[in-house]
Amino acid sequence: MTQSELIRLFPAAASIPERVLLIHPDQMHLLKGQSVQECRVFILISQGSVTLRTGTKTTRLEADCFIDMLVWEPIEFIDMSPNLRAWCLLPNYLFTNEALHGLKPADAESFKDRHTVPTLPLNNRETETLHHQLELLYAALNDTEHFYRPLLCQTYFRSFMLEAGNILRHKSQTYEDSEGVETRQDTILRSFLKLVWRYYRTEHNVEFYAAKLCLSSKHLSRVVRQKLGKTPYAVVRDELLQQATTLLAESKMSIQEISAELHFSEQPAFCKFFKKHIGMSPSAYRSRGMRSNS
Image 1 (tube, helix red, strand yellow):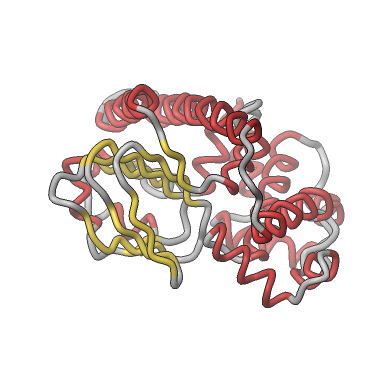
Image 2 (cartoon, helix red, strand yellow; image 1 turned 180 degrees about the vertical axis):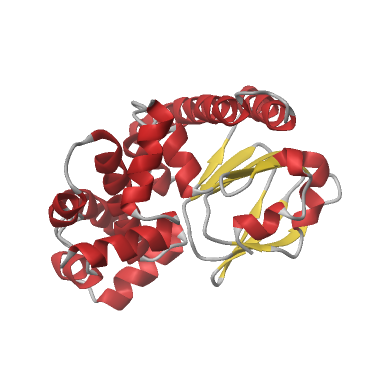
């Protein structure tokens, strides 16, 4: 199910249509047996467990853990323990980009490290910190009469991401300081991500990255899917979308110039790509941003 389809299962006050859905712990059982796709998925578990399936991989998530699934492939909620207490936050790309626009350091760059720690173990204090942020966001969503409700929800989402980013940075530093041994798959993934961040503007094909790594495209896809739950192309695509939305919002470049900057064969190809994943044309996205800033 897409985010828009899932929203219909929950009270209207738990969501902003075509933007974000926050599922309260008391309503998590409604996700059992459901699949989710085409949006980012955050899960915070304070008690009990959840079993998920992404592709062919099944994962059991226990208490005091946080997961940020940067995937567009379906995620199926297989099972939940009777004592489960967990939040599930589902923002789409547009809401995430609007809320985190211009945010440093808790933007895409700082969250890339999450690829090496897809499931983040937490201590009680860290769990409580994120739980509190989600309570604030839920309260803002439920205040449907608030004149600035959408903006307030973006603000609390932004605060949540800052707290998650702070925890992640401390965890990543601890990981880097440890004597853990990096596996061959970890090395491949880290090298692939570095290549993507360097070449995504000019190289959109997976074959280029596989050749750089002296791997077959099939092997690279297998490693990336296993580690991230998404295809190599999806990683490149998300970088392109991030850069495209930033240029549309912050630069004076024409759409044709942005298309050329990102090395699309022609402007119509860029517009088709952008609308498919963002849900509106580049010109509509830029106009919307100009109206919200006026």
